[in-house]
Image 1 (tube, helix red, strand yellow):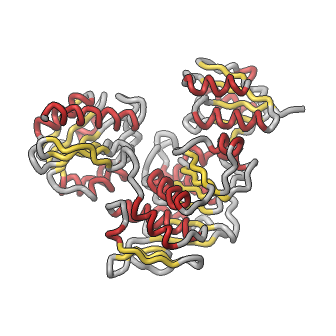
Image 2 (cartoon, one colour; image 1 turned 180 degrees about the vertical axis):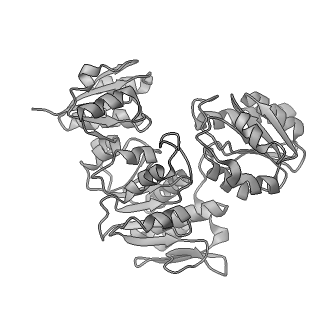
Image 3 (cartoon, helix red, strand yellow; image 1 turned 60 degrees about the vertical axis):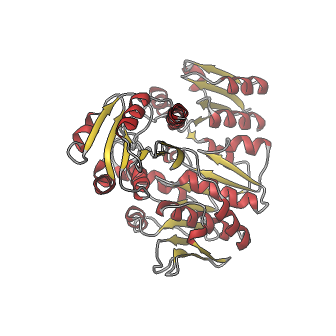
Length: 451
């Protein structure tokens, strides 16, 4: 008798999981409480997969042998509570896909930098001629690629939400870049719950596998005192420490030292600037070395990689004021890294859906580098309370147009306007990409109006 597989969520991961399930002979039903995009309508119809939107047919859902849940669906929703009460196993799309491939898995998580590191790792491997797929939070559905394409290696960006429902999946290379408070509203405002979710990336590692991590992250270091892994350890740090596999030496060269490959490259030749990107480059280079990629190909790819959209993305200069789109900075630590690479006289645009943020982490850099803060959100009370009196001026705005107009009014030649919101985008925008695109659109229109 065929297995009943229910998919919750009709986005990229859900539709990919549905197609893989059907390919493997399961009875598949997909349900989305919201609206499914037309692109995914067509894919489901072409595959002959039953689906619904705008509702959950609980009789169908509770008849499942197994449920694949979209990462964005909280375990606290009524449908998930009903599934839990019935004792139906719930897995992620990544978990499902992992059952049907023997490809090598390079899995990357962290509170900040994971998209850049994932794309950089993919860039290195692709340029080296590896048959590599890109999946997870970036790229296309892993399940869909396993069903249709069959790569030798997958580079996968994993959020804490995706890791929650992964059990038997095994990474060959697991990377944790850093862990700072984020998504605490999802984790009962308990940091340890969030840490535990991130550390699920170490599940099932063997002595043949590798674990790459930032050696100076206090959260990772403390957790490693409680958690053991059989994997080979490859820590990275800004400067050489005991056991470091990657660091910068006294000659300002990036050093990578693994049993497979040793690499020396002047830091100035890296395509990505800033301390956070140094760490991202180390993690990507370590992954490539462990996979035995030629050192010259690694060096070349580290030097010609183009940055990630919405992450410290230069947009334009208008009347001598530089505008930088860092909309992907949806938490406080990500904003810290952005400010760390900024000059003084920065105008900082903050705001959005607060996820339990503690802004004290960025306060020293704000005092050092920020001449004005523009709050941009439906409700800016928390930001106004915290930062009033900490910067020379602070402004309360409630739309992208109002925020850009304020930046234009207060900006002077030599200033930098940085959109690095610290918050999720969902109060005024559909996503951080939407927020970044609207920011760039308004800035470019501003530039055109001055020509």
